[in-house]
Image 1 (cartoon, rainbow, N blue to C red):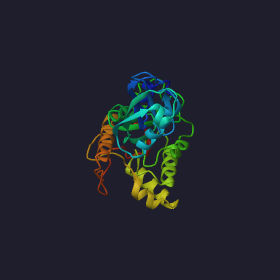
Image 2 (image 1 turned 90 degrees about the horizontal axis):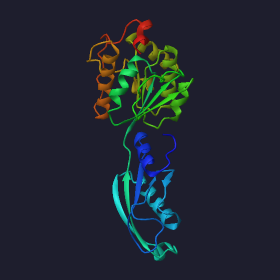
Image 3 (image 1 turned 120 degrees about the vertical axis):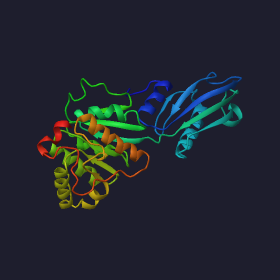
Length: 283
Protein backbone atom coordinates (compact mmCIF):
# COMPACT_ATOMS: atom_id res chain seq x y z
CA UNK A 1 0.00 0.00 0.00
CA UNK A 2 1.93 3.00 -1.27
CA UNK A 3 -0.66 5.78 -1.10
CA UNK A 4 -3.53 5.32 1.39
CA UNK A 5 -6.79 6.68 0.00
CA UNK A 6 -8.84 6.95 3.20
CA UNK A 7 -8.47 7.03 6.97
CA UNK A 8 -8.82 3.25 7.35
CA UNK A 9 -6.05 2.49 4.86
CA UNK A 10 -3.93 5.24 6.45
CA UNK A 11 -4.15 3.62 9.90
CA UNK A 12 -3.01 0.31 8.40
CA UNK A 13 -0.19 2.03 6.51
CA UNK A 14 1.00 3.83 9.67
CA UNK A 15 1.12 0.58 11.64
CA UNK A 16 3.02 -1.20 8.88
CA UNK A 17 5.61 1.57 8.68
CA UNK A 18 5.80 2.40 12.40
CA UNK A 19 4.56 5.90 11.65
CA UNK A 20 3.04 7.91 14.49
CA UNK A 21 -0.44 9.21 13.74
CA UNK A 22 -3.54 10.81 15.21
CA UNK A 23 -6.99 9.42 14.43
CA UNK A 24 -9.49 12.30 14.58
CA UNK A 25 -13.18 11.43 14.99
CA UNK A 26 -16.25 13.68 15.08
CA UNK A 27 -17.93 12.44 18.28
CA UNK A 28 -21.06 14.57 18.47
CA UNK A 29 -22.69 17.24 16.33
CA UNK A 30 -25.29 19.93 16.95
CA UNK A 31 -26.83 22.23 14.41
CA UNK A 32 -25.28 22.88 11.03
CA UNK A 33 -21.83 21.24 10.76
CA UNK A 34 -19.42 20.35 7.90
CA UNK A 35 -19.47 16.56 8.45
CA UNK A 36 -21.67 14.06 10.18
CA UNK A 37 -21.06 12.29 13.49
CA UNK A 38 -18.45 9.52 13.07
CA UNK A 39 -16.48 11.25 10.31
CA UNK A 40 -12.79 10.48 10.63
CA UNK A 41 -9.40 11.56 9.34
CA UNK A 42 -5.79 10.59 10.03
CA UNK A 43 -2.96 13.05 10.59
CA UNK A 44 0.77 12.24 10.58
CA UNK A 45 3.73 14.53 11.00
CA UNK A 46 3.66 15.55 7.35
CA UNK A 47 0.46 14.23 5.78
CA UNK A 48 -3.27 13.94 6.32
CA UNK A 49 -5.82 11.46 4.98
CA UNK A 50 -9.58 11.91 4.60
CA UNK A 51 -11.42 14.89 6.03
CA UNK A 52 -13.69 16.05 8.85
CA UNK A 53 -15.05 18.86 6.74
CA UNK A 54 -12.25 21.22 5.88
CA UNK A 55 -12.21 24.89 6.78
CA UNK A 56 -11.06 26.34 10.09
CA UNK A 57 -12.26 23.27 12.00
CA UNK A 58 -10.01 20.90 10.11
CA UNK A 59 -7.11 23.36 10.08
CA UNK A 60 -7.23 23.70 13.88
CA UNK A 61 -7.69 19.94 14.39
CA UNK A 62 -4.67 19.11 12.21
CA UNK A 63 -2.56 21.69 14.04
CA UNK A 64 -3.56 20.25 17.43
CA UNK A 65 -2.94 16.69 16.21
CA UNK A 66 0.65 17.50 15.25
CA UNK A 67 1.19 19.26 18.57
CA UNK A 68 0.04 16.08 20.34
CA UNK A 69 2.37 13.94 18.19
CA UNK A 70 5.30 16.17 19.14
CA UNK A 71 4.82 15.31 22.83
CA UNK A 72 5.83 11.70 22.08
CA UNK A 73 3.02 10.29 24.23
CA UNK A 74 0.12 8.10 23.17
CA UNK A 75 -3.06 9.54 24.65
CA UNK A 76 -6.65 10.60 23.98
CA UNK A 77 -8.15 14.07 24.03
CA UNK A 78 -11.63 15.52 23.43
CA UNK A 79 -12.01 19.05 22.12
CA UNK A 80 -15.24 21.04 21.82
CA UNK A 81 -15.66 23.36 18.84
CA UNK A 82 -18.49 25.93 18.74
CA UNK A 83 -17.96 26.67 15.07
CA UNK A 84 -19.19 30.24 14.84
CA UNK A 85 -17.76 31.69 18.07
CA UNK A 86 -14.50 29.77 18.23
CA UNK A 87 -13.59 29.27 14.59
CA UNK A 88 -15.62 31.85 12.73
CA UNK A 89 -17.27 29.29 10.45
CA UNK A 90 -20.63 30.22 9.02
CA UNK A 91 -22.14 26.79 9.77
CA UNK A 92 -23.10 27.96 13.24
CA UNK A 93 -23.24 24.48 14.79
CA UNK A 94 -20.97 22.72 17.25
CA UNK A 95 -18.93 19.54 17.28
CA UNK A 96 -16.93 17.50 19.73
CA UNK A 97 -13.80 15.91 18.30
CA UNK A 98 -11.87 12.94 19.68
CA UNK A 99 -8.10 12.88 19.16
CA UNK A 100 -6.53 9.41 19.50
CA UNK A 101 -2.76 9.91 19.51
CA UNK A 102 -0.70 6.86 18.58
CA UNK A 103 3.03 7.40 18.90
CA UNK A 104 5.23 4.76 17.31
CA UNK A 105 8.04 3.32 19.41
CA UNK A 106 8.92 0.51 16.99
CA UNK A 107 12.57 -0.19 16.36
CA UNK A 108 13.61 -0.08 12.70
CA UNK A 109 15.64 -3.07 11.50
CA UNK A 110 17.20 -3.16 8.03
CA UNK A 111 18.11 -6.62 6.75
CA UNK A 112 20.46 -6.80 3.77
CA UNK A 113 20.31 -10.05 1.82
CA UNK A 114 17.43 -12.38 0.95
CA UNK A 115 19.19 -15.72 1.12
CA UNK A 116 18.39 -18.81 3.18
CA UNK A 117 19.21 -17.36 6.60
CA UNK A 118 17.21 -14.20 5.96
CA UNK A 119 14.26 -16.25 4.69
CA UNK A 120 14.31 -18.30 7.91
CA UNK A 121 14.76 -15.16 10.01
CA UNK A 122 12.02 -12.92 8.62
CA UNK A 123 8.98 -14.96 9.82
CA UNK A 124 10.37 -14.86 13.37
CA UNK A 125 11.32 -11.20 13.47
CA UNK A 126 8.05 -10.14 11.83
CA UNK A 127 6.27 -11.21 15.04
CA UNK A 128 8.29 -8.72 17.13
CA UNK A 129 7.71 -4.97 17.61
CA UNK A 130 9.96 -4.08 14.71
CA UNK A 131 9.66 -2.11 11.50
CA UNK A 132 11.56 -4.27 9.03
CA UNK A 133 13.08 -3.13 5.76
CA UNK A 134 14.36 -6.10 3.73
CA UNK A 135 16.85 -5.15 1.04
CA UNK A 136 18.54 -7.12 -1.74
CA UNK A 137 20.41 -6.16 -4.90
CA UNK A 138 18.89 -8.90 -7.06
CA UNK A 139 15.71 -7.95 -8.96
CA UNK A 140 14.09 -11.37 -8.48
CA UNK A 141 15.14 -11.84 -4.85
CA UNK A 142 11.62 -11.56 -3.42
CA UNK A 143 9.68 -12.90 -6.41
CA UNK A 144 8.53 -16.19 -4.86
CA UNK A 145 8.73 -15.31 -1.18
CA UNK A 146 5.80 -14.96 1.21
CA UNK A 147 6.64 -11.61 2.80
CA UNK A 148 4.79 -10.64 6.02
CA UNK A 149 2.69 -7.45 5.75
CA UNK A 150 4.86 -5.46 8.19
CA UNK A 151 8.01 -6.09 6.13
CA UNK A 152 8.91 -3.68 3.34
CA UNK A 153 11.03 -5.16 0.54
CA UNK A 154 13.47 -3.10 -1.51
CA UNK A 155 15.34 -4.20 -4.66
CA UNK A 156 18.29 -1.88 -5.17
CA UNK A 157 21.31 -2.75 -7.35
CA UNK A 158 23.36 -0.55 -5.00
CA UNK A 159 21.91 -1.46 -1.59
CA UNK A 160 24.48 0.65 0.27
CA UNK A 161 22.51 3.64 -1.00
CA UNK A 162 19.61 2.61 1.23
CA UNK A 163 21.65 3.08 4.41
CA UNK A 164 21.62 6.91 4.53
CA UNK A 165 17.82 6.75 4.10
CA UNK A 166 17.33 4.77 7.31
CA UNK A 167 16.13 6.52 10.48
CA UNK A 168 18.81 7.34 13.04
CA UNK A 169 19.27 4.54 15.59
CA UNK A 170 18.17 1.86 13.14
CA UNK A 171 19.66 -1.61 13.56
CA UNK A 172 21.28 -3.35 10.58
CA UNK A 173 21.75 -7.03 9.75
CA UNK A 174 24.12 -7.82 6.89
CA UNK A 175 23.37 -11.29 5.47
CA UNK A 176 24.24 -11.00 1.78
CA UNK A 177 25.75 -13.51 -0.64
CA UNK A 178 28.78 -11.32 -1.44
CA UNK A 179 31.78 -10.66 0.85
CA UNK A 180 32.70 -7.46 -0.95
CA UNK A 181 29.15 -6.15 -0.59
CA UNK A 182 29.13 -7.15 3.07
CA UNK A 183 32.19 -5.00 3.68
CA UNK A 184 30.80 -2.06 1.70
CA UNK A 185 27.59 -2.14 3.72
CA UNK A 186 29.41 -2.35 7.03
CA UNK A 187 31.81 0.46 6.15
CA UNK A 188 28.99 2.70 4.88
CA UNK A 189 26.94 2.17 8.05
CA UNK A 190 29.87 2.78 10.40
CA UNK A 191 30.90 5.95 8.55
CA UNK A 192 27.45 7.41 9.12
CA UNK A 193 27.94 6.63 12.82
CA UNK A 194 24.31 6.75 13.89
CA UNK A 195 23.45 3.04 13.98
CA UNK A 196 24.08 1.35 17.35
CA UNK A 197 23.94 -2.20 15.97
CA UNK A 198 25.55 -3.31 12.71
CA UNK A 199 25.45 -7.10 12.72
CA UNK A 200 27.09 -9.25 10.06
CA UNK A 201 26.99 -12.98 9.45
CA UNK A 202 30.29 -14.77 8.96
CA UNK A 203 33.14 -16.67 10.54
CA UNK A 204 35.62 -15.43 13.12
CA UNK A 205 38.22 -15.20 10.32
CA UNK A 206 35.97 -13.01 8.20
CA UNK A 207 35.12 -10.80 11.18
CA UNK A 208 38.79 -10.30 12.09
CA UNK A 209 39.68 -9.44 8.51
CA UNK A 210 36.88 -6.90 8.29
CA UNK A 211 37.80 -5.33 11.62
CA UNK A 212 41.40 -4.91 10.50
CA UNK A 213 40.32 -3.29 7.26
CA UNK A 214 37.87 -1.00 9.07
CA UNK A 215 40.59 0.06 11.49
CA UNK A 216 42.87 0.95 8.55
CA UNK A 217 40.05 3.15 7.22
CA UNK A 218 39.83 5.01 10.53
CA UNK A 219 36.71 3.17 11.69
CA UNK A 220 38.26 1.05 14.42
CA UNK A 221 36.47 2.81 17.28
CA UNK A 222 33.13 2.73 15.46
CA UNK A 223 33.61 -0.98 14.80
CA UNK A 224 34.45 -1.65 18.46
CA UNK A 225 31.30 0.15 19.57
CA UNK A 226 28.74 -0.93 16.97
CA UNK A 227 29.97 -3.75 14.69
CA UNK A 228 28.75 -7.20 15.80
CA UNK A 229 30.28 -10.15 13.97
CA UNK A 230 29.85 -13.08 14.14
CA UNK A 231 26.27 -12.01 14.71
CA UNK A 232 23.80 -13.79 16.97
CA UNK A 233 23.68 -15.42 20.37
CA UNK A 234 26.76 -17.64 20.20
CA UNK A 235 25.46 -19.84 23.03
CA UNK A 236 23.00 -21.30 20.52
CA UNK A 237 24.77 -23.94 18.41
CA UNK A 238 24.15 -24.99 14.85
CA UNK A 239 24.94 -23.94 11.28
CA UNK A 240 21.71 -24.56 9.39
CA UNK A 241 19.73 -21.50 8.27
CA UNK A 242 17.01 -21.99 10.90
CA UNK A 243 19.57 -22.49 13.67
CA UNK A 244 21.44 -19.35 12.68
CA UNK A 245 18.12 -17.51 12.39
CA UNK A 246 17.15 -18.54 15.93
CA UNK A 247 20.55 -17.38 17.18
CA UNK A 248 20.17 -13.98 15.52
CA UNK A 249 16.56 -13.65 16.68
CA UNK A 250 17.67 -14.29 20.26
CA UNK A 251 20.18 -11.46 20.04
CA UNK A 252 17.59 -9.09 18.57
CA UNK A 253 15.13 -9.97 21.34
CA UNK A 254 17.82 -9.30 23.94
CA UNK A 255 18.40 -5.87 22.44
CA UNK A 256 14.67 -5.14 22.39
CA UNK A 257 14.61 -5.83 26.11
CA UNK A 258 17.67 -3.59 26.62
CA UNK A 259 19.91 -6.43 27.70
CA UNK A 260 23.44 -6.56 26.28
CA UNK A 261 24.03 -9.27 23.74
CA UNK A 262 26.44 -12.00 24.86
CA UNK A 263 29.98 -11.70 23.55
CA UNK A 264 31.90 -14.77 22.44
CA UNK A 265 35.07 -15.29 24.50
CA UNK A 266 38.33 -14.92 22.57
CA UNK A 267 39.38 -18.08 20.84
CA UNK A 268 35.93 -19.69 20.86
CA UNK A 269 34.82 -21.01 17.47
CA UNK A 270 31.66 -19.35 16.13
CA UNK A 271 28.70 -21.42 14.98
CA UNK A 272 29.12 -20.12 11.44
CA UNK A 273 31.50 -21.66 8.97
CA UNK A 274 35.20 -21.09 9.54
CA UNK A 275 35.86 -21.54 5.85
CA UNK A 276 35.19 -18.13 4.32
CA UNK A 277 34.24 -19.74 1.01
CA UNK A 278 31.27 -21.34 2.81
CA UNK A 279 30.14 -18.33 4.85
CA UNK A 280 27.56 -17.20 2.37
CA UNK A 281 26.19 -20.60 1.40
CA UNK A 282 23.84 -20.45 4.40
CA UNK A 283 23.34 -16.69 4.01
